[in-house]
Image (cartoon, rainbow, N blue to C red; front, side, top):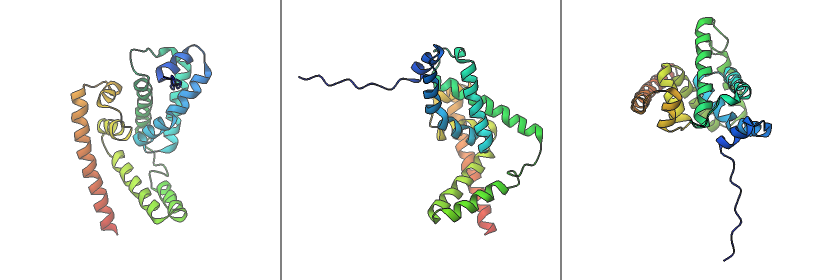
Length: 201
């Protein structure tokens, strides 16, 4: 029998961070490419603001670059980097509360601007999806922080219950219970938002 050529497997996250810890800058670039969109989505769902999410992700990679030797292979790399992003997002939320200023986006102008552009440029179906996305994000924004964390990590980022527990440093049973309660709260908030929109129409 002829032996089949062995295909090169892509490096694991742990391979890449190990290479980066040995000053392989190309490995850092691969980590950024692999995680940038995932972390941006995670931070955006957490903060509900694109610019703040981009700042958080940029700071995440900056910390990774500066503190590459802080990672130890006792934990999955994904858990470690999500923890950094989550902590930075929580810090940003606390800063936001302290500021107590009304920004343009809080007054709804930012959302309306995007809505007009989207309706003008895309089909009715795309516009409908856009509005649904806005409604879901609004409901997530209104969740208490503990429920927001688990619903974003588990249902949007699709991490395992075990990974969520490690990132948030809570027991597995607590994760499952909190996810179930968060889903119920999110369903109730979505229904409330939809009902209010229907009344306005």
